[in-house]
Image (cartoon, rainbow, N blue to C red):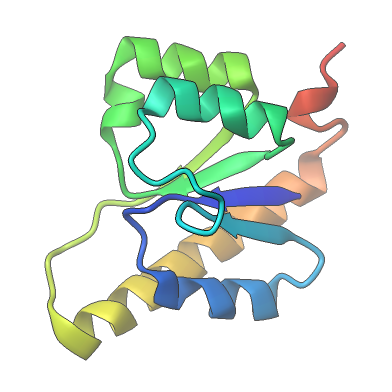
Length: 122
């Protein structure tokens, strides 16, 4: 599966994700040239680029009806968590550990249950 890591997620999370989930792909907002892109157009672009899910800390994407609808229409799985504010190395360590564990549960569940990918809708 192919996951987009939003700009609000620390880039320090990328290598642990990539090394743990070697059969999956993780693109990063800044590497993809998509930082500062509004959410609804972002979801459309991610669908065009054949992403299966977005990893983010932006919980408004689920609260806002238009954004929630755009996620659904794009066929994107939403993987997120609320983050506490911690600075420095402690903040990076906590975010990486939380992101890694939460993603571990979600990625494996999605991969195991995927009968078709969202961009292969019938």
